Length: 123
View 1 (cartoon, rainbow, N blue to C red):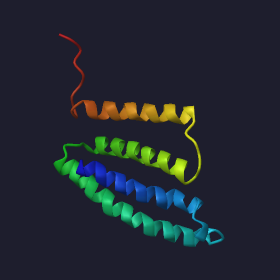
View 2 (tube, rainbow, N blue to C red):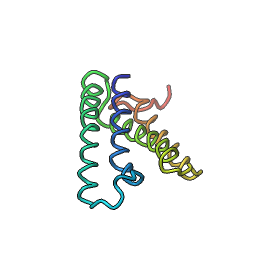
View 3 (cartoon, one colour):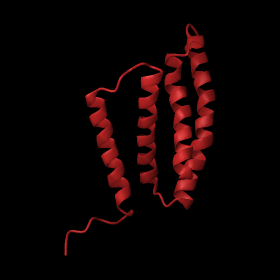
View 4 (cartoon, helix red, strand yellow):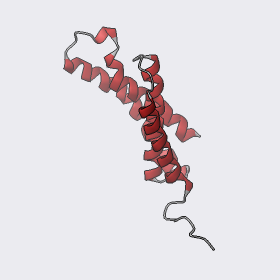
């Protein structure tokens, strides 16, 4: 659970760094270099949470590197859906919802089986 919470926090900062600048009024009319530096400043906090999340999940949480990446991508999308709805005022259309469900299916496949194991083919 610690890994998941750290990944959620990390992705909130990442989403703000990457997409917040699209709506932050105080960045309007600023140079691209300034906006990039502000985004890097926000992204610093993403890294401060992402690195311990990955270490915790890999060394103590029983996740493989592949599993951590797929979990992170699902969390990224979930955080972005909320951000797009609340901040960007964009709605989730059916094609994006289906795309998200397919990625959730990928998460299930990545975590349902132990690394290196294959599903049983029967008796």
